[in-house]
Length: 480
Ligand code: UD1
Ligand code: MG
Image (cartoon, rainbow, N blue to C red; front, side, top):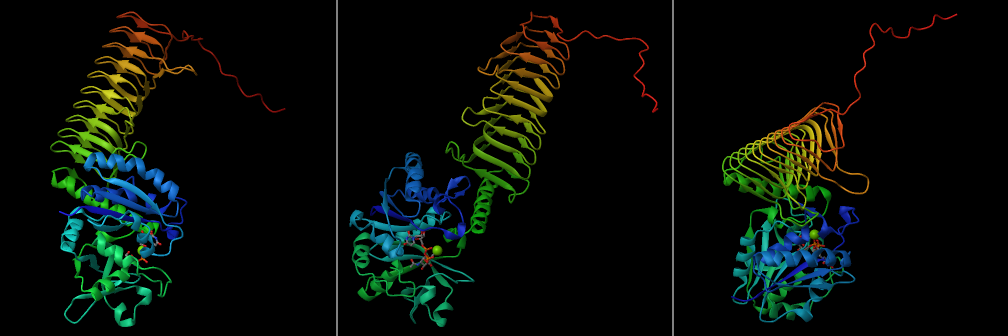
């Protein structure tokens, strides 16, 4: 098979996004548009990819170089190169900038940095159509083709050329088959045609699409690989289009999960994203009979064991949730880099918050408005209401009362709290770290504990109750 070299056009401004961020760096499913396109290059096992940059070039290049190496280690390596196009004089001019780097033995696939949802199978078919020295165009029929280049065919249906909307006659504007902006062509042919482009047209631009008529004139076969799924070639030009493609992409992901048996209450209300902070791919790894209610957002890699149930409106990032655990609605779990784990059969939420380094054992219960950070809770431990556990090691079957907190931070350093097995911490306690509550001990409600306690001890550290019998409240003075 011939080697593939991918050209990705990414120099355009994206005026209609009305954003300071270059268009190809706008995110779809947490990942810049351009990175979705680079993934396609990886899936095609391309030999190289050249990204043509212009507007925001420095930013685009910086944001892409690292990500591309991550991509290539995952799906096979390709050489990545950036070529600047300044000023931007049209798509033909953009591709002309790559000419010094084109290798004549290869096939070139032209992609756009703002068209994120093209499927690898479609591109493979397009490449196959170009084999044997042909120019292959990816085309699609649109009910409203306004703005697109039209595919002009002759009486015997052979492609004759592409005419841009602004240059088209009324009869040509009636054509609904349009050029997608994606083509595959032997590099050697492309090189020859690029040298002859002119900007003698309605927009005064160098049109890449003019090479089609050149091919026809030279007797080079032009084939149109026509698809029906317009989403695959849809570009992002505005916030609305970005949101539309996001929904389409999420629906695709939701369907793929449902095919594996995951039960989503509503595939239209499901989101799975890359973690923009770490670049970790959005990925759900699910056992059998996982149920996910509406409006949940998953970020990065999330594993869920058999029978896990996720309530409505949960946000879950970088976490492992073991079999049979139930996450009640409105729970926020974010393992960031350290990860967060929930043990088998644990009950979490509603309104719970698990932060990085939360490691919960089997049958742990974390109730409403409880925050856990960098803490290990052994099997059967419970913190059911309004509590904070930070930098704590909590033993088996510990019961941690409502309103209790670990004071883990002295203003300069963090310290650990150790609560040994079978301890009961009453309500509204402050455990001032570093401190250890010995096994089986009890801490009375309202205590501020600053010294470690012995096994089995009851510790109470609060003002002694004083009751004054028959005390009368002050009465209001009569007005004089
Ligand atoms: C282009 C095609 C049109 C097709 C449409 C599909 C041409 C002349 N026309 O039109 O037939 O139907 O795409 O979406 O090719 N870009 C550069 N440098 C430039 C100009 C553009 O890098 O100087 C990039 C843009 O950032 C974008 C892509 O090329 O990623 C397409 O450019 P755009 O201006 O959207 O082309 P259209 O006029 O829409
Ligand atoms: Mg366009």
